[in-house]
Amino acid sequence: MQEPSVVEQLKKNFHDNVPTGTEIVRVALSEFLGKKLDNSKWIKANFSELVEKVQTTAYYKYLEYEASAGAAAFREVFLPMAGKNGTAVDLMEVFENHFYDLDRFFLGLTQGRRPRAGGAFEYVIREMFQTLEYPFTAQAVINGKPDFLLPSADYYKRNAMDCIIFTIKRTLRERWRQIVTEGTRGHGFFLATIDEAVGRNDLDAMMQSRIYLVVPKRLKVSNETYATALNVISFEDFFKLHLDPSMERWKAKKVPPFV
Image (cartoon, helix red, strand yellow):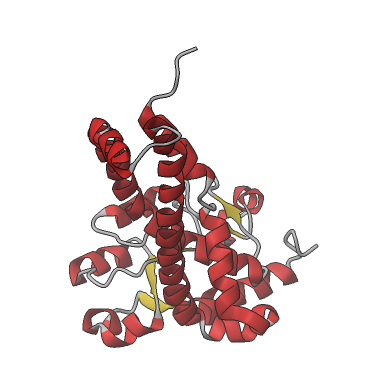
């Protein structure tokens, strides 16, 4: 059996020492929520601030774990190459001989940070939805694969018009158009983002496709384009005007899991 390459060894040791995105977000959430973990009213009233702070904190926590795991991988892979009694000069020679392995390893770390940032944003919302006990199916395959289908994929099959489709994209560019294929029969399309640069033309096009842009309250208030767009709402208004009324309706209809 062929020995794993130096890059493969570095990657394996690195990933063995880095917590999952979900674990990191849970640590960040617990720091911010503290004793308010069971206070759903407070969480919903402060959801915008929590989303921004927790996802930023989670990302920087990942960078801390990244540095620690990288150092551990170097010790595990390179120190034996320098020999039991190896000197700093011997270790530098090892690094020199594996310069391009290091280059590939660090390139992989750099390329992985942007998806990590987007993942942190999604993890935060998912964890907070679960904390608030909102029912959903994650990554349901309908006509596309939205991040959240509320209340469930099973109910969508029976009554799609009474469901909420909620998708998360940290930054948009032209990718918002993907949501149109992520189920065309839902009661509402909601696209959560912290992108500050969605233009008026895109917002108008979203309006034509019945898409609401859900942003932190800070952006809704401070961004002039967002402030005047009828289909841009804060997370707090999403709960108050859309999700919570739907929850009451699903409960009244005894839609699972409210049987």
